[in-house]
Length: 180
Image 1 (cartoon, rainbow, N blue to C red):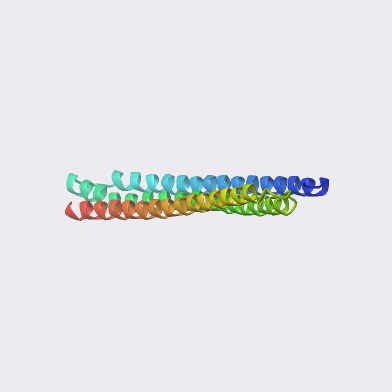
Image 2: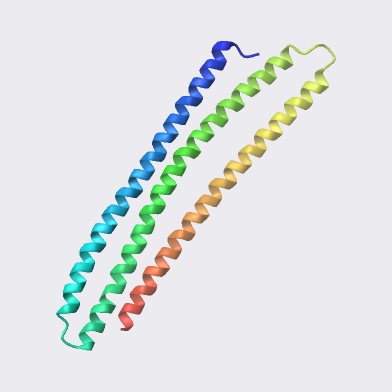
C-alpha cells in the first residue's frame, strides 16, 4: 500500500510534468506565431517588389516571364514554410510523447512493485492466482510496448511521406517554370 508521502510525491511529480508540458505547448505556439510573422513580413515585401516589377513591364512576354519566375520561389517558400511548421509540431509532439513514456514507465514500475509486494504477502495456496496476475501484467506491458512501437513507426512513415510530397511539389513547380 502506498504511504501518504508516496502519494504526495506522485501528485507533485504529476503537477511538475503538467506545468512542463504546458510550457512546451506555449513554446510551440510562440514558434508558430514567430514563423507566421516572419513569413508575413517576407510575403509583404515580396508583393511590394513584385508590384513594382509588374508596373515596369513593357510587354506581355515580359509579364509572362515575370509571372513564371515567381512560381518556383513561391513553391519552394511554401514547402519550406510547411516543413518548418511540421518541425515545430513534431518537436512539440515529441516532448509530449517523451513525458508520456516517462510517466508510463514510472507507473508501470510502481505497479509492478505493488504486484510483487502483493505476491510476497499472498496467503499460502494462492500461487496460481498470483501467477495469473503476473502473467496478465506482463501481457499488458507487452501490449503497451507494441502500441508505442507502432505509433513511432507510423510517425516515421508520415514524416517520410511528408518529405516525399514536399519534394515532388517543388520539383513539379520547377519543371513547370522551366517549360514556360
